[in-house]
Length: 178
Image 1: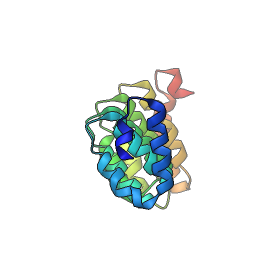
Image 2: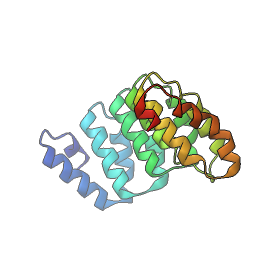
Image 3: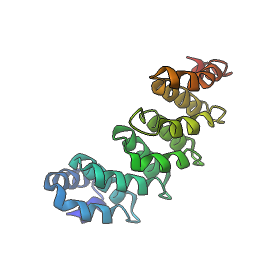
Image 4: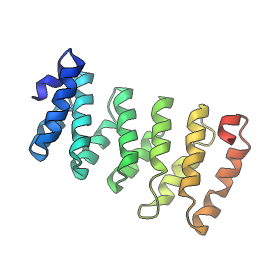
Protein backbone atom coordinates (compact mmCIF):
# COMPACT_ATOMS: atom_id res chain seq x y z
CA UNK A 1 0.00 0.00 0.00
CA UNK A 2 2.90 2.39 0.76
CA UNK A 3 4.14 1.75 -2.79
CA UNK A 4 0.93 3.33 -4.10
CA UNK A 5 2.14 6.65 -2.70
CA UNK A 6 4.40 6.86 -5.76
CA UNK A 7 1.65 6.05 -8.29
CA UNK A 8 1.52 8.46 -11.25
CA UNK A 9 -2.24 8.96 -10.72
CA UNK A 10 -2.96 11.52 -7.99
CA UNK A 11 -6.29 9.89 -7.09
CA UNK A 12 -4.50 6.58 -6.43
CA UNK A 13 -1.98 8.34 -4.21
CA UNK A 14 -4.79 10.09 -2.32
CA UNK A 15 -6.60 6.78 -1.88
CA UNK A 16 -3.41 5.21 -0.48
CA UNK A 17 -3.11 8.06 2.04
CA UNK A 18 -6.69 7.50 3.18
CA UNK A 19 -6.23 3.74 3.53
CA UNK A 20 -2.94 4.08 5.40
CA UNK A 21 -4.46 6.59 7.79
CA UNK A 22 -7.34 4.17 8.50
CA UNK A 23 -4.86 1.42 9.32
CA UNK A 24 -3.51 3.74 11.99
CA UNK A 25 -0.72 2.80 14.37
CA UNK A 26 0.46 -0.35 12.56
CA UNK A 27 1.18 1.75 9.43
CA UNK A 28 3.44 4.24 11.25
CA UNK A 29 6.77 2.38 10.83
CA UNK A 30 6.15 2.03 7.07
CA UNK A 31 5.18 5.69 6.81
CA UNK A 32 8.32 6.79 8.65
CA UNK A 33 10.38 4.69 6.26
CA UNK A 34 8.47 6.10 3.26
CA UNK A 35 9.24 9.63 4.45
CA UNK A 36 12.88 8.93 3.63
CA UNK A 37 12.06 8.14 -0.01
CA UNK A 38 13.76 9.97 -2.86
CA UNK A 39 10.33 10.54 -4.45
CA UNK A 40 8.61 13.74 -3.35
CA UNK A 41 5.10 12.29 -3.82
CA UNK A 42 5.96 9.38 -1.50
CA UNK A 43 7.31 11.70 1.22
CA UNK A 44 4.30 13.99 0.88
CA UNK A 45 1.83 11.10 1.03
CA UNK A 46 3.56 9.58 4.05
CA UNK A 47 3.37 12.92 5.85
CA UNK A 48 -0.31 13.36 4.99
CA UNK A 49 -1.18 9.86 6.20
CA UNK A 50 0.79 10.24 9.41
CA UNK A 51 -0.91 13.55 10.23
CA UNK A 52 -4.31 11.93 9.72
CA UNK A 53 -3.39 9.09 12.08
CA UNK A 54 -2.85 11.72 14.78
CA UNK A 55 -0.06 9.95 16.68
CA UNK A 56 1.64 13.02 18.12
CA UNK A 57 4.95 11.42 19.17
CA UNK A 58 5.54 9.69 15.83
CA UNK A 59 4.32 12.71 13.89
CA UNK A 60 6.58 15.15 15.72
CA UNK A 61 9.63 12.94 15.19
CA UNK A 62 8.87 12.69 11.50
CA UNK A 63 8.16 16.40 11.16
CA UNK A 64 11.37 17.34 12.96
CA UNK A 65 13.31 15.15 10.54
CA UNK A 66 11.36 16.80 7.72
CA UNK A 67 12.71 20.20 8.78
CA UNK A 68 16.13 19.02 7.58
CA UNK A 69 14.99 17.52 4.28
CA UNK A 70 16.75 18.79 1.16
CA UNK A 71 13.37 19.52 -0.46
CA UNK A 72 12.10 22.95 0.59
CA UNK A 73 8.46 21.86 0.22
CA UNK A 74 8.97 19.08 2.77
CA UNK A 75 10.65 21.55 5.15
CA UNK A 76 7.76 23.98 4.60
CA UNK A 77 5.07 21.33 5.13
CA UNK A 78 6.85 20.04 8.22
CA UNK A 79 6.98 23.53 9.77
CA UNK A 80 3.33 24.18 8.89
CA UNK A 81 2.30 20.88 10.48
CA UNK A 82 4.33 21.63 13.63
CA UNK A 83 2.30 24.83 13.99
CA UNK A 84 -0.76 22.59 14.38
CA UNK A 85 0.84 20.38 17.03
CA UNK A 86 3.37 22.35 19.08
CA UNK A 87 5.69 19.99 20.94
CA UNK A 88 8.76 20.63 23.09
CA UNK A 89 10.83 18.25 20.92
CA UNK A 90 10.28 20.54 17.90
CA UNK A 91 11.08 23.90 19.49
CA UNK A 92 14.88 23.83 19.14
CA UNK A 93 14.86 22.43 15.57
CA UNK A 94 12.36 25.14 14.58
CA UNK A 95 14.52 27.89 16.08
CA UNK A 96 17.44 26.60 14.01
CA UNK A 97 15.38 26.26 10.82
CA UNK A 98 14.28 29.91 10.95
CA UNK A 99 17.61 30.56 9.20
CA UNK A 100 16.56 28.47 6.19
CA UNK A 101 17.64 29.82 2.78
CA UNK A 102 14.02 29.60 1.60
CA UNK A 103 11.76 32.51 2.56
CA UNK A 104 8.78 30.16 2.28
CA UNK A 105 10.27 27.93 4.98
CA UNK A 106 11.34 30.84 7.20
CA UNK A 107 7.79 32.21 7.06
CA UNK A 108 6.30 28.82 8.01
CA UNK A 109 8.78 28.47 10.88
CA UNK A 110 7.97 31.98 12.14
CA UNK A 111 4.27 31.09 12.03
CA UNK A 112 4.88 27.81 13.89
CA UNK A 113 6.93 29.51 16.62
CA UNK A 114 3.94 31.72 17.37
CA UNK A 115 2.17 28.68 18.82
CA UNK A 116 4.87 27.91 21.40
CA UNK A 117 3.12 29.62 24.30
CA UNK A 118 3.51 29.47 28.09
CA UNK A 119 3.78 25.68 28.43
CA UNK A 120 6.96 25.77 26.33
CA UNK A 121 10.19 27.73 26.63
CA UNK A 122 8.59 30.79 25.09
CA UNK A 123 11.75 32.87 25.45
CA UNK A 124 13.56 30.56 23.00
CA UNK A 125 10.84 31.14 20.40
CA UNK A 126 10.80 34.88 21.10
CA UNK A 127 14.59 35.17 20.75
CA UNK A 128 14.49 33.44 17.35
CA UNK A 129 11.63 35.59 16.16
CA UNK A 130 13.21 38.83 17.33
CA UNK A 131 16.36 38.06 15.33
CA UNK A 132 14.23 37.92 12.16
CA UNK A 133 12.45 41.25 12.48
CA UNK A 134 14.88 42.50 9.82
CA UNK A 135 14.48 39.52 7.47
CA UNK A 136 14.92 40.43 3.81
CA UNK A 137 11.49 38.96 2.96
CA UNK A 138 8.44 41.05 3.83
CA UNK A 139 6.23 37.99 4.38
CA UNK A 140 8.70 36.53 6.85
CA UNK A 141 8.79 39.84 8.75
CA UNK A 142 4.99 39.93 8.81
CA UNK A 143 4.83 36.34 10.14
CA UNK A 144 7.39 37.27 12.81
CA UNK A 145 5.34 40.26 13.99
CA UNK A 146 2.09 38.25 14.03
CA UNK A 147 3.75 35.46 16.01
CA UNK A 148 5.27 37.88 18.49
CA UNK A 149 1.81 39.36 19.03
CA UNK A 150 0.40 35.87 19.59
CA UNK A 151 3.08 35.14 22.21
CA UNK A 152 2.52 38.38 24.18
CA UNK A 153 0.03 36.79 26.58
CA UNK A 154 1.44 37.81 29.96
CA UNK A 155 2.67 41.23 31.16
CA UNK A 156 6.22 39.86 31.47
CA UNK A 157 6.18 38.57 27.88
CA UNK A 158 4.51 41.75 26.65
CA UNK A 159 7.38 43.87 27.96
CA UNK A 160 9.90 41.44 26.42
CA UNK A 161 8.16 41.54 23.04
CA UNK A 162 7.20 45.24 22.99
CA UNK A 163 10.37 46.41 21.24
CA UNK A 164 9.83 43.83 18.49
CA UNK A 165 6.24 44.88 17.96
CA UNK A 166 7.28 48.55 17.84
CA UNK A 167 9.95 47.65 15.30
CA UNK A 168 7.22 45.91 13.27
CA UNK A 169 5.11 49.07 13.36
CA UNK A 170 8.07 51.01 11.97
CA UNK A 171 8.71 48.56 9.11
CA UNK A 172 8.92 50.29 5.72
CA UNK A 173 6.47 47.81 4.19
CA UNK A 174 2.77 48.41 4.88
CA UNK A 175 2.08 44.65 4.91
CA UNK A 176 4.18 44.23 8.05
CA UNK A 177 2.63 47.27 9.74
CA UNK A 178 -0.94 46.15 8.93
